Image (cartoon, rainbow, N blue to C red; front, top):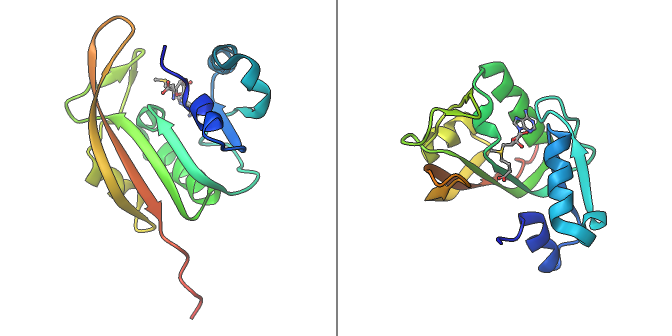
Amino acid sequence: MLRALAEALLDRGFLDVTVLDLSAAALAAARARVGNLADRIHWIVADITEWEPPRPYDLWHDRAAFHFLVAESERAAYLSRLKRALKPDGHAVIATFAPDGPDTCSGLPVQRYDAEPLGRTLGDEFRLISTQRREHVTPWGSAQSFQCSVFRRLPALPAS
Ligand SMILES: C[S@@+](CC[C@H](N)C(=O)[O-])C[C@H]1O[C@@H](n2cnc3c(N)ncnc32)[C@H](O)[C@@H]1O
């Protein structure tokens, strides 16, 4: 079985790992999956569009959550949290369905992205570092096209 990202990060020596999801059930399943390591991870049940980041982080990783935000107001709220949560020079890794991916997931509409439109959505404070296409095979065997892009948050400009 593939290791969960949080588990892999702890294995590599990262000490401060937080996992956030809207769904308490999803987090309970994730906790069960990592077993004894669960106590070394900060777990947060929250809607990312309403979450108040308690402190800044070095890395933001989002696989298949942002694409559920189809309303402009939801994307703006997400971006506001991302900017408050990510340190200048920090990195955001954002994976979404690609333009040839599904247009719904779990019965909900999604917004599909290529790297450049995603970068435009994030705005001038983020620079695209790299991007990859991925075929994700679901547990029921269907392939879904994803893009996974890495952005660097530009350092704050000195006050003039
Ligand atoms: C397709 S799953 C991906 C789960 C996990 N990131 C992964 O890659 O295995 C999408 C997840 O996004 C979460 N999600 C959707 N909208 C969210 C929101 N507004 N705030 C936080 N989590 C959200 C869902 O609860 C769900 O667990």
